[in-house]
Length: 172
Image 1 (cartoon, helix red, strand yellow):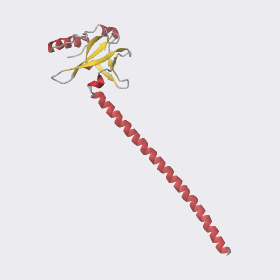
Image 2 (cartoon, helix red, strand yellow; image 1 turned 45 degrees about the horizontal axis):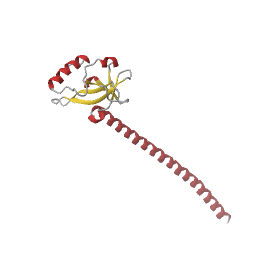
Image 3 (cartoon, one colour; image 1 turned 180 degrees about the vertical axis):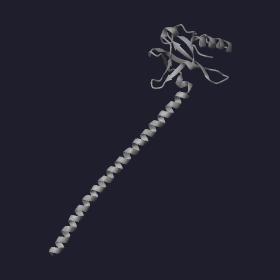
Image 4 (cartoon, helix red, strand yellow; image 1 turned 90 degrees about the vertical axis):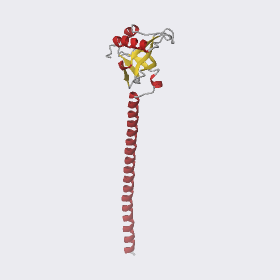
């Protein structure tokens, strides 16, 4: 009987010891699984952020006119120089030639329109505005036109282009 009691005691102690070891193994596996899931979640999050960043970069290179119109124009001092009211395209090349910028006035009254050569504007991605490297006082002297008297003909735009290229020091 003592032998049986001893065997039962040994058996119980072994089970408890093995059970404790199994519990530790289960706990370790749970921890490893949790760590793997966290790494996978982080990797997916980074991948998603990378995709969003690439999409944002491509939108800076190619964008709908409706997203550009209304965008602010600022100078290197951060001063507001107006906003884009219209885009002027070259029908032969299909490229944007000018951004028509509204500057001055109050609530659209008394403001002047400027055809700014597209290539002098630089997109500031993290601030979401276009940079025009001129002083406010210089822009006030820039060739422009009012809302009711846009250049209409090709010859008027050609003349405007010559004047603007000289003013903004753009190489033809």
